[in-house]
Length: 124
Length: 124
DNA sequence: AAAAATAGATTACAGGTGTAGTCTTAAATT
DNA sequence: AATTTAAGACTACACCTGTAATCTATTTTT
Image (cartoon, rainbow over all chains, first blue to last red; front, side, top):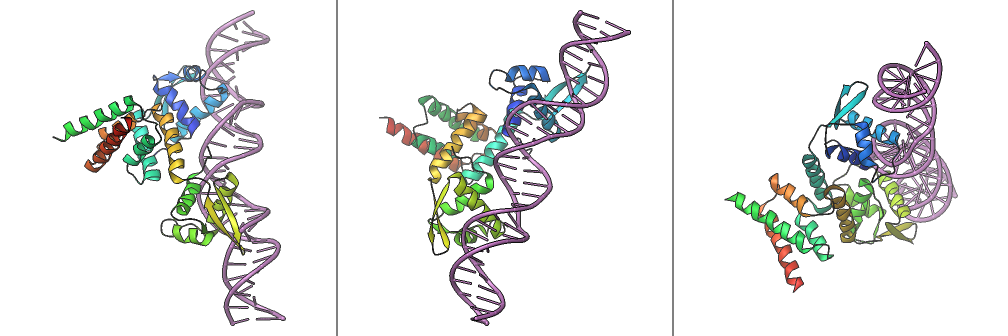
């Protein structure tokens, strides 16, 4: 699995919003949340390319970036990894931790029920 | 939140198994899973102390280590953090990702149902 | 008592990370 | 045409991390 740092992920996440996109568009998108210097973001884009998380095509003297993977695929892998590390690969203890500490809303519960429901339908 | 590296967490995790414990006991516990040199583990213990994740008391010339927090508390904070970063703080999309990629077993589903059940009982 | 083992403290060192600054070159502006 | 701007490339640098090795002082062992 490609390992991304937090900052790198944030840049990639800005690209996932809509792509392909130029560096300036990504910088623009990040400007709301982050106080990053333009150069910082370009460094991170370079590192993402080097890690194989992005590709680009030249258009004039600009690069047009495209992610090399889907956000869902990446977060799924990260999730598996996370759950393996902290909960020996089982997902329920994570949810249970949230429940115990009152971090679950009725909406979360409804969504979880739907996930379970869909899963069960799929089993038939 | 105290930020621990992977290796640091693994050491702390070995202490959580049973504590207080000496460095040698921790080294012993880790020897099954990791090929770490004794010195490596001691370095990590030192860093954990410095980060405030552990304390120790002297007993003769050894240190007896104790974690400064519970495993559940730590993993809950890590989980919140994780879910915030990757799923905007909502837990269902994580579970849903597992479901879609066939990562959920019947046992997981049963456990999740129980978590939901308990939560609902608690609401009354 | 001398030597060896061992506990922790200190030092090491390469690669990753956050966070830019400088350099080079080509395009845009005056 | 000369100058300014802006894109990406390259360089920088401190702190974190993984992974120990060396130093120092105290116990054990012989």
